[in-house]
Image (tube, rainbow, N blue to C red; front, side, top):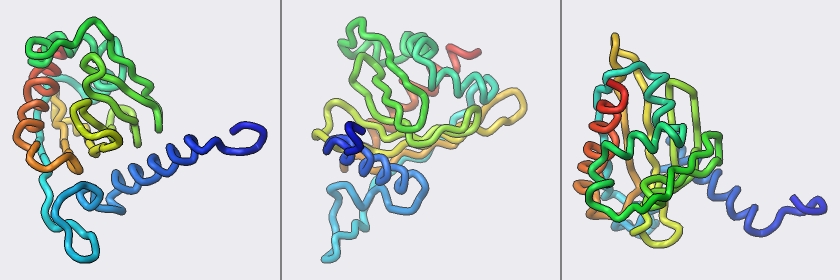
Length: 185
């Protein structure tokens, strides 16, 4: 706010945050805002999404920290397939873990905003790949559930460009779940 007035870009950002928040809370369909086939009213009835439930050999607090602290995420990245297959450079993770806080991961290839954070329990992000069209964000949700000495991550990802589900699902396996287990075991 400057002199009691919102700059135009701030208003746009607030609208995006509200939209992403509504998507994350289930008040809107994430897939209805993508470019999937739509009926005459513009409602999409075709959507790809990812649902995975990996087990991580650590407690929910440690999993949460690995996903929301830049130094921990940088260590996780060292176990990822992305580090081997992409030219990530030396750019470290940048993570501002608060609602509407930005993040930049894997050398800036993945970026977005935190929509909701419940320490040790849940992370919701507006998430995008640098290869996507400008302004296109998907929604990812990590629910962290303690199961004895492990954490089950109830993970959902939707609203990404059509045709990318298989590649993204594999990416979550080799760039998040396997590295988390290596880092936290």
